[in-house]
Length: 156
Image 1: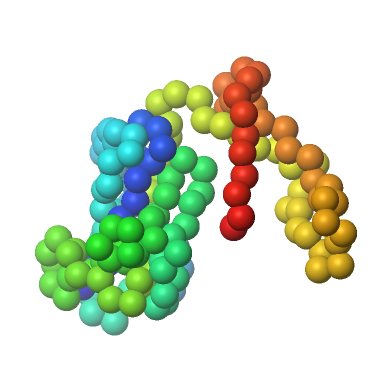
Image 2: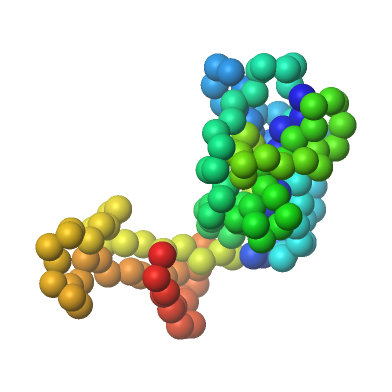
């Protein structure tokens, strides 16, 4: 069975390995040469595993997942995410927006935005009054240069 994930990056970079979670634990397969990826282009990262040896949870990619510049988009946004093929072939099928725990090791070609939170892992208590400050955020670039842009946030 071939299991994978559709993803894109908000910036160009290279992928040097694939990480995947077959039973029992995370594995890493390093590439002989990094693969160049372009910003805002959909890619599929996948691996082949014997039948019954891959992990998967339904509906985990229903809303998508974002980590730094990488996004595994919501299944409905890309015609199905959490892709598979029952054979050792390109994964084109998707069922129940399943997360098959496939990831890539990505290095951006330019600096990326880093957000530092003063109160690590902030959360909003249920009894917090409207307008309460739960953390301050300091944006910087990964190369140490000052961020001079504007950050805007919307509802989760």
